[in-house]
Image (cartoon, rainbow, N blue to C red; front, side, top):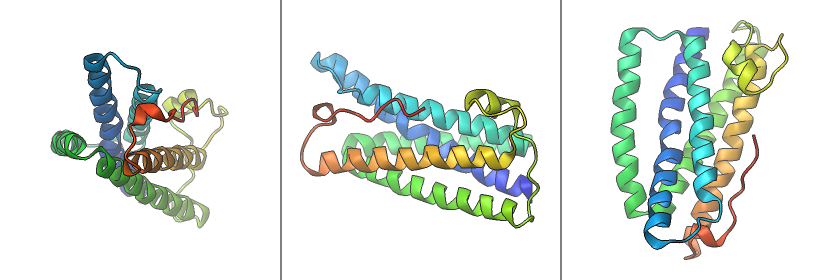
Length: 184
């Protein structure tokens, strides 16, 4: 059962690691082309991508994926990267809104994960060392502690992406509204 939740988290994080990188990359290129600042949005989106990558690395330690699960990660990531890239080019507003909703689903999934641990249906195993190091958790931290900090990260990503979508919805550019950075 722990492996099933670990695999679900791994798949969520495979997809979640893409949007920040795509958005950050496209804003970076726009910034270079137009010789203008980004209002901190490049940094915010790339921080999000790095944070989601660490979620993936953490849950890979938990799930210990087989070769075919790793192949699925590569396939899903490749398809989603290209689809999201096109979506972001066509409508950054829709792209950010979609990510906000994906993050809401992730929060729900991690809340369910916590419930399963709290009810004793999943063991509260020790946290992987990579998680202890990245989130500066106590040495005796458990998987429950990890899921809590990951869920908090997802809530922040949800808020940032809905904020970005709102900016676009108002007909403004991201660079004109300072990005919420420095949460981690």
